[in-house]
Amino acid sequence: MLKGFEPIYDENSEVLILGSFPSVISREVGFYYGNKRNRFWKLIGEIYGEKIPDDAAGKREFLLRRRIALWDVALKCEIKGSLDSGLKNVVVADLDPIIEKSKIKLIILNGKKSFEIYSKNYCYPVKTVCLPSTSPANVNFDENKWKDVLKEYA
Image (tube, rainbow, N blue to C red; front, side, top):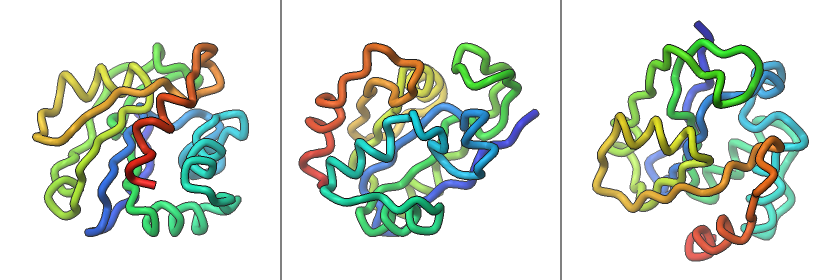
């Protein structure tokens, strides 16, 4: 059973972005969206008009300054490789502390698998949107959907 990362949030967080589970490369580098081919950090930087720092501490500071919370719906699971289709025996994350201790107004599910897990396990009275996965494996990625949703929070 592999364990994912700790959540990033504080009492000012307004947008919660939930992935499925860290990829092999992310687990190797020890931080979210560690694969340089993943579109997440580049896209978030474009939306907020900033260059995203390369280091984990800088990325964490950026997220908190921009009132973005980040976590994964799978706290623990079994998986070979990085594809969401390989997720097995998922232990879902407890989102209650984030929802209760922050000001979440929007939950973004990064891809279909995170949306599937979220939909089966959670029900919060918060606007929730499933957006195309930023994974390099997603050949149908549409960055404009992300930009449209996040423009009011940037």
